[in-house]
Image 1: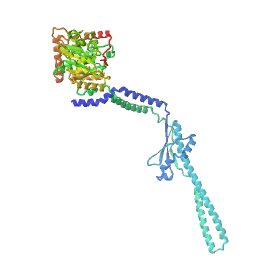
Image 2 (image 1 turned 90 degrees about the vertical axis):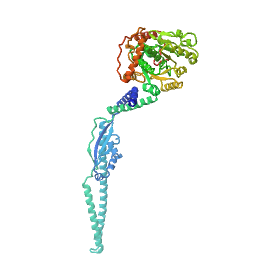
Image 3 (image 1 turned 60 degrees about the vertical axis):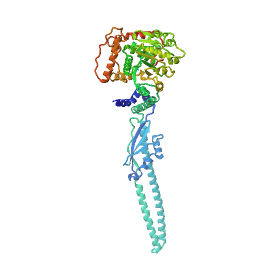
Image 4 (image 1 turned 45 degrees about the vertical axis):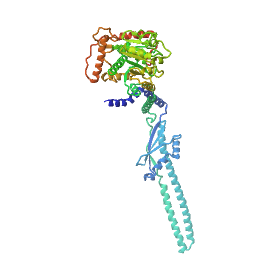
Length: 595
């Protein structure tokens, strides 16, 4: 089944490429069609006329010399006669022989239909005229030759007669002269008969026109319909070629399949759709709280379920979220993921480990005056630096604090490890928001000690080369890379991904999870309500257990009953974060993000 799915996906990849580059193809087709239409509008129309001629000379009738006759149809003598007939220089014509006959079809092209037909008729009549003149000249020459020979014989006959009269009758000499006279008379008589026959018959025509040429009703060029259709096909072929070429030289990650090819063997835990609100980089927005029923919140809940499922056999205490560059949206992902994890009842601490450009505190509306660096330098106690997040009782934040001069050294020191151990005793999960991997080495330092690492890439922003380099850096430090997240995923990708995930799951987790955000399960508990409407620690534990049951039911096909839904307060909490962030007006870690 997996092999078949992979094969189908590979077959669909070219179609996905063409769909993604469809505007290039459409533009090429439109340009080709408009260009051809414009060209046809200024092109001079060309008309093609035709007529037929039958060669009747003896050689043609005997099956010999017809190709010579067709060649002579375009001779200079015939062209001169045709030009004289139409009153202007006649272009050459095309002659096509009809197999098995002595008939040939003559074609001529011109910008005027009447002129085209006149050219055909002029060439046919010109050929007949030239051949007739040749026959007449030959006949005249032959008559002159016969007359000359007759005159010569007549002179000889007169001489023989005079000589015969002068010689004695009955003499041997007279008999000889009489014989010569008779021969000469017979020759003259034969020649006179030939001359009479030649004079009484007219020269045989070398050809006849069997079909006159008439003006054509429509031009052969341009033909707008066929030309535009051909132009559209050419434009389509060129557009496809350009689209495939662009795809070949395009180094950007644009889809889940691109990300999975760059990170072989590492599952894509989720696809975060492009959010309109994230386009304003000045406003950090906690979308999971602001729009708990939106597609982005559902995507984060799906990732949460995947992480919970991964933790069943291999518990995750420290989760590092990082990316190759600062514009991939890692801080946005880490904040929303931490909020979503806490909404399920886990005690989560999110730590701002980006000590160069800290922005974690802006998403939760807390102060950055005291934070991680303050604890590292011994300027504050850990419990004093930890801050509660309004509206999310299970989430606390340890902001980055004042920017130090040596971030890498601080993160690599023993003090940082000690703080992480202390945090692990105070919560169920630590989420680390780190700097980008490629510009600085801070994330590589943290990745080696984290229980799990998630690599973030942004569709249309992250490059395959940078993502591959980031993966290589993480592998070099022995990081436990559990999965990747594609930020700013195309709408078509996220729709198909989560529609598939709802029924069968993807990677480690169940597609949507069950009951998060808008319709959380209720449970019996006397504790304080959670951020997404669940009821305290005991209720949250039941919810996580139910999540695992749903994932197991999804994989095995065993039905599971749905607990009664309870009203959600995640929307109120999220709106609170959204308003506080917007009032500050700070730069947003949008997708693309600055962190």
